[in-house]
Amino acid sequence: MLAASFAAVLTGTTILPAWACIFNILPLFLIFTPFHLVSTGNLVSAIMFLGVFFLI
Image (tube, rainbow, N blue to C red; front, side, top):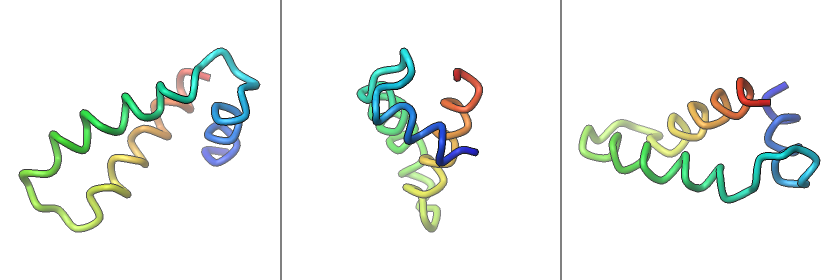
């Protein structure tokens, strides 16, 4: 279901623009970077997908 939400954003079938994904990932990544967590990018992307899921 989350992959379908991401695909809907990237293909433009929703009102959410693709740049919304970037502006959700970048600040979260900068927040989590100082903690030196393993797979920070994956964690931040999962949080972004969850946000997109609730917005759609």
